[in-house]
Image (cartoon, rainbow, N blue to C red; front, side):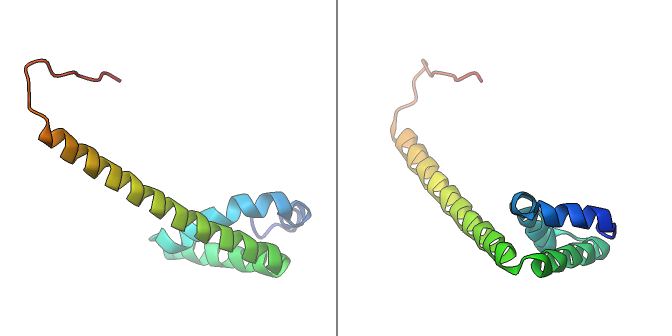
Length: 103
């Protein structure tokens, strides 16, 4: 697909919309995928995007990294809230009338 000139032309014309969607997936693929062929294709597509519009590509990568940092921060806050909740619950006496949440 990425070797098709028509597809590349369409991507280039719509890069403002496409890159912010595709670059985070490519970045994650490049960091986590186990298959070397997939890693090579990912690197080639990222290089193509970089050559197509270096400024937009860099902005997308920067936003992707910021989103990852924000996600890690949110996960840490969530973990701390659960730890506080668990310690508060541990201080409460266990009674026979325990409420059960059903989802």
